[in-house]
Length: 205
Length: 384
Image (cartoon, rainbow over all chains, first blue to last red):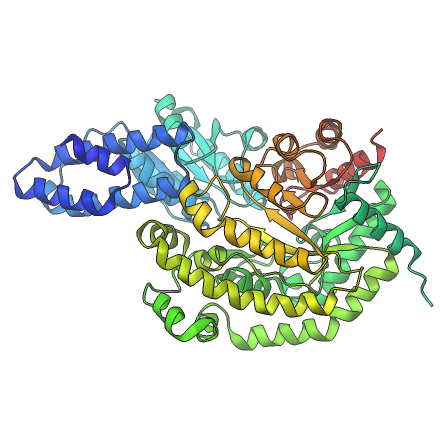
């Protein structure tokens, strides 16, 4: 079973699928396979943080994780692994970029978070509604355009107006976000990449 | 008859900077969106009337000169080509346009969708570049729209170029030279990033074959533009872009196989005609920046966006490679003039003025504060 995490961490797609199928055929508990995959993703994240892996590697591992997830789904019967917390995620209004957001989605999912994705070009109300419905303690805003800093600001103001700001930590990410944007928008922190989104969310709990 | 005194003086300064023989840092205007906005146009109007937009760029540069002192050059000739059409050609992606798919004030954006299917690699391999390209292009842009703006460009580019010369504004990069772009960028655009990155792991050798076909076709086209301009000193540089090919994005295995060989070959081709390639490198290229020392000293421009460490680049490459950059977009949009001034002054202090163009990282964002733009140029001019 340890092989599954290694295969995922080493980005060996074909062999991983074969081994997962064999394990399922042998009656292995699907949740334990999922946990193995999560362990593999943790390894990927560490390699990325250490500078041994790059964005393409994260994307490849994310695709592998997703594919295994789809393979396991009929066997899981609605069961999920341990959930650390819920996170509402989306790209802010006026910005249609989804690559970074989707990568964060996979990394958070594999890191044990339940992610509610409100999509791209999402209005502040969409984020607020998702926060209210889910009770998520973390809001993750993606932004690739400097011209959309005000959309981050508007979203955070909407969270304040809804009376949720004290209960919700807000992280931002995307190419042009940095500490100056955190100051400008009143977010709590920014992440440089998808892996740092996972670390930030864990720190926020 | 115009004497072009100011233009020739600026041109001399630009060449000296590329050759790392300048005494003072040279400021360079780089901002497609802020110029029309500052001159009272919406981005929808800019997209619809790129000729008016081109003159707005000149007007804005003149305004900056009045408020901040000399602006040495601009990175790209404003050329009067519709940005959506231009970016479509660069990435073979669908571009969402202000005033059409987006609001009037929104910036144009790439719509990330998979246009090309896996089978289309075989179309390229069996039927060649032209058939493949002509199959893909109508899928990403309305050809009537594209043709209309191509015509507008053709009718106006000479006058725009001449106006720049009269005003003394040197454009480092010109539409007259079209270097061969890196096939990876084109394929990544048309296939979509997630699908193409997966292809890189699953079929790297096939992608080399595909890339070679695209690159050879682009090189042939590039050779014509280079040949036509090889004796014209006003045409300084050819622009080669790297975004999704950045080191931070790709594993070394992929980068070494599918990116660097083409960057090197494209740069070599530009150099072989006596022109200077500008490598516009977005995202972080720290890991591989040393590769650029494979080009001769004093021959290339590395245009960095604030994510590659310019100081490290200087250390690794030495004093004889020209660097251009890198006032970060967030600072220009949200910082204060004092912060911009401090950033620029420190950058010049640390890097030294030789072989240094000071400009916005990547491209100044549309919401750059005017006072910050002024501060960037003034700090460069005031540096002692």
